[in-house]
Image (cartoon, rainbow, N blue to C red):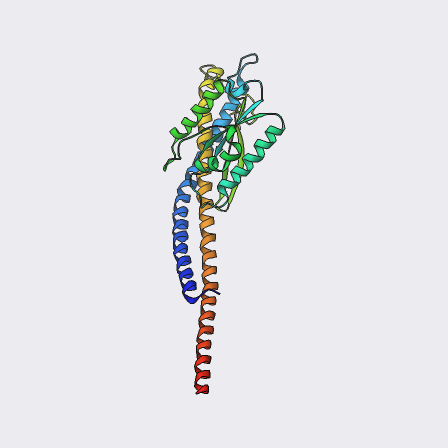
Length: 294
């Protein structure tokens, strides 16, 4: 049985840990508000961009060669998976859920006879998968910046498109956590190359009102310029969703840790008091027994 001193030291240690988890929860809650605002604000623009590209693609005359970012290489033998995770832990199952989903996807593709390549954005995903899937890794992007910017997404897209132009893969997916709420994040696989677009008719505008549009310059020229930009926009949106999901998961994890620390402190205090009472009772019995012996 631990001594009173051991129990007292353990209670003190858990109280110190509880202060840390409580502070991290408050910091994560503050960052979550900003990250959520950015993620929500990016959704309408990225969705409008997809609808515009769908309208443009439907307006391209038949027989016109579509850009490779939309048509693909004509094969699906080699798949590149861009794995977006965080750089830090203490965020519950945020990183591990993405890693588990990626592992399942890799095994599924390999079971179909496909070649798989992995590219990591964020240190945690790389650290958890490098031992088992080290031979599949083709790169790791620089550490996530404190303030996530559009230029960071453009750097990722440059690497991916450069490999695609060199013919090193046929299909690219991005896996990340889509933010739903502070306690709910959904692991999402999004195909980014070749681009998948929502179905739209040629006469449908961005608001769903029927109409006819003439494009200048020609549709294929606009597509050639917008497709790389849309790829960066969708990547940036995925990173913002991931950032909000990470802060939400961290806030929830730190809240649970603070509650668990409080429960443990209560149990240890009860144990400490019982042990102390037993020691006092034992001493009193020894004193009484000694007095009776005299």
